[in-house]
Length: 275
Length: 325
Image 1 (tube, rainbow over the protein chains, first blue to last red):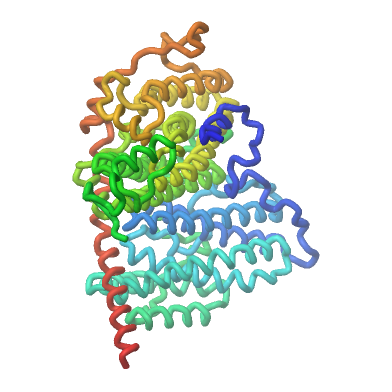
Image 2: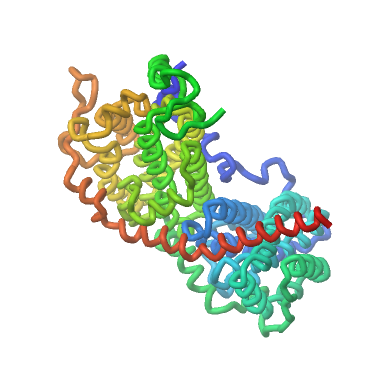
């Protein structure tokens, strides 16, 4: 048999469209899940939870995408893309759920591309610029630890769709946390320079810690993870310094608007287009 | 057993005859087998250039991940660019079986001592470029690479099988994006045609100079590293693409393009070979930008790689100390 068959199959008709984008969402991800909102649940509240979690994921994925072609090693390009893709997948599912329950029937792209910065409910930590690799690692460690602890609880949420999304996300987030924790230890322990950069990164995230813990009560778990990792890395715990305002109320840093301008620019230039 | 990295006499007598017979029988050369220096050097050069092309090739499309106009397209593009990083990794590993290391090859790229495919020195000006790159550039890459699945060097051939499967997937995704855009607005159709106009000729140049001006081809064909000539592969690409363009509803920008029933192939115009030479020599629209990005990623990441090395050494020392105590 000739290996040229790979070429020959390409020249044939494209009748197996279903295979084209395996894992990239051509199929309905909520297929087969009962999407009616259970009685007794406040649909508005449920939608708000979904949007906030989706916004965290989308904005984080966007920042991770900025690392592509700029990462310190090829393995890191692959890993950061993996994490970004997982988060993008979570955002899509959560936006779809929000659109089903908030009565607007909006699709995922309506939330991602056609809302302004004031309507985004992500924490400000997610929207800060990438900084150096140390800052991105510390931020990922915090966001992944928080999100994992939160998703573990959401896996038993009375809304079966949110519970299913959270259960799926737990596996992904365990890997994200592991990846960030390993790098935090390597960088904290590695050289004087990497240690110094990690200290600085921990100082930089300190003002944004409080915001993570206001809405959902998983503070103790996240602090425990952070303690364990900083100890292994020979680094001090960040000092809690609360910053006024909250991304959860639509109060953002100056960094969100330009991020959204890049994310939304093409879609908004062609509002009638289909992609 | 010792591994020979040069033309020194191996344990077997008459290694050259053994090598020639292996090639003649269409069997594979493996890393531990004796091979002529020229064969090894040619392979290192070709595999490294291929790996560099995957890595530099992440840039023109990578710029659009943050701008993709739907979340579905963002996910598809993100995954595609990630695949390219993965292809770079397999290929660098295949090159390492020949006795070079990745860090050294990366330095050769950054210092401009090794090349990458000239196609990646053209800019991506609209989101339609993402689709056209998938259709043309991945399509041309597949035409080039599928025969390499039968390349005489085992590790390279096996890497190519996996890469070709993923690239055929990318090509279809690119074509599917263009199909969707062609069903959209007039502005979208114009974007697609414009991208086709800009990428067609550079894509034809991906197969390299014409056969009568390709200095290394003859020996590579004899060694069965290469299986088809540049012109054969270019013809194959044109014949494959013309019906796809018709189905899509775009015009390929070549007034000389027509079916030749006598040859059973399409006739087509001559690419601007002077342009190809200029781009290869560094004067393409984006050469400086591509190299600058790769170099700065490498330089800015140096402290991270050093930290990882230092940590591993400290860990090893601690483990040793622990074992002694």
